[in-house]
Length: 310
Image (cartoon, rainbow, N blue to C red; front, side, top):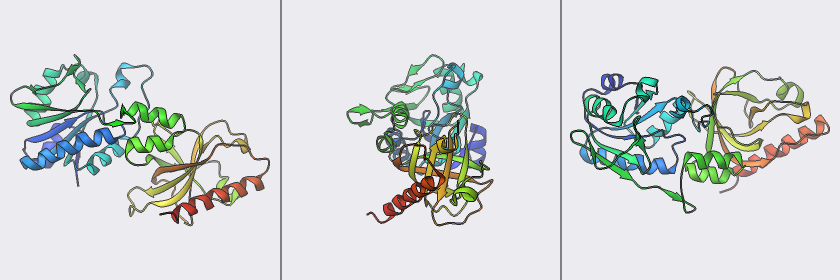
């Protein structure tokens, strides 16, 4: 299990005194471009028999410098889990404060990378710039820390980026977004009480998710998904998820509601992760509750049919 820390002191307390191989970046979404960077760092750490550390930031640095920062593809807890899944021994999530933002690349390298973490080799993306002076790293920094720059990973002839994934999700190109991520796009949120129509009115209970304020969401539609309870047994359960305004009920705001197939679960107050596999249909208004019920059962049948596919 990877160590997750919010400061170098906390990391050293958990792992002991060490030198390490590190990689650094925003890692928003931890997509296939990030995966190559992380793979290279983890492999080099194994060769040197020292820990690998992924250094990232929360909140996203753009939130300090922009009045309209991009929404994030994953929450901090998702990011930590995804970085650990890529084989990193430790994840250091630094609070991105004005003080940290004011440090130059040389100051950050001397303080955090050299003195506090004793980084021997640092793997960075081809376009990563560090510090308030936005230095494009190459060669070496400080005394003995070698910088390894990793080239862009291409998909469709263009570099993979978090921006491309956001654009694909907004344009209802879920398949493209999932290909760029190297896995299914997923959101996490606490299950809260909704309008109370799922079970009592429609006979199909749903879990209403409260999402982080700046979390990326898919385009409004109904999706085939898989869901799991965080902190539970880890099982992914087949589900159908609506991210719509509920036009049949004259809704005005988007809500994310998930029905887990063939289960009777008390999910209130628990954190759920929902993984988006495929769009089933667009948002639409139905003329009657019976017509809506019929369509919802067709949606569920379509999701069940996916389970029979190889």
